Length: 263
Image (cartoon, rainbow, N blue to C red; front, side, top):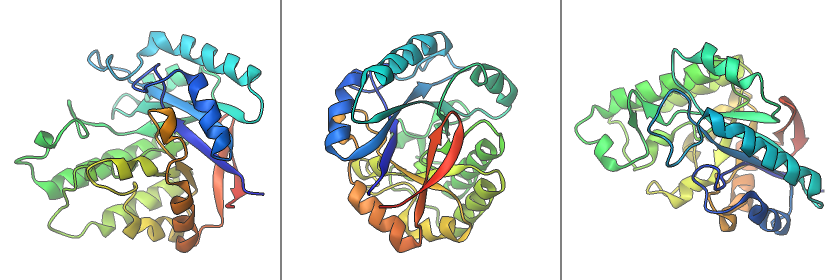
C-alpha cells in the first residue's frame, strides 16, 4: 500500500488562500493518508502579520485544526506549525512551543538579520553571494541544532531566485546534512520550489544524495498555499527519493517520528 503524507500546508490562518476544510478533498483525491497543517508562526517580529501568525493567534488555529481532525473521515489530520528560527531566541521559542499539543514543528529560516530572503531579488543585489550562502546555511544548521524542530523546511531557500555562489557549494549541503543527522532532525523535499523562479524542488536535486549518504530522515511536502497545490509534483519527488537511495520516509505524531516505507 502506498502511504503518502503532506505535512506542509498553509491556510488562511497565515498566508494560505483557503480555510483548512478546503484542503481535505484534494488531499484525499491525491491519495494522501495524512495531511498536516503548518501555518506560519513568527515570534519576535511585529511586521509579519500580513503573512504569519503571532503568538496570540495560535490557540484559535490549533482549536480549529483539532475540531477538523475530529470530524474528518478518510484521512488523518495532523497539527503542526512552521516556526521562524531566530538565533539567540531559542529559549524563548522553546518556552512557547512546549506548551502546545502538536504532532510536529517545522523550523524555517526566512530571515537573515532583518531582511527576508524570499521577498524579492533586491535582497541579493550587491551582496557577496558566497558569504550569503554560507550565512544562510549556518542559520539552517543552528536551527537544526536548537532542538526546537522535527523537520527543517526548504533548507536552501536562499536559491529561490536562482543566484549561486561562484565557488562550489557542495560542502554547505554536506555540513547541513551532517548537522541534521547529529541532531536527529528530518528535512523535506519541498515541491513548491518548482513554482518559484528557481524552478525546482528544495533542496537542489543535485545534492539530494548527500542527505542519503548521511542517513538524514526525509519527508515530501508541497508547501501548498492553496488547495490545488496539495501533493503537487509528488510522483516526481518520490521517484527522485528512490533514485537517491531512500526506501523510507519520516512520519510524525505527538512530536514523535516513525519511519514508513516509500510507496
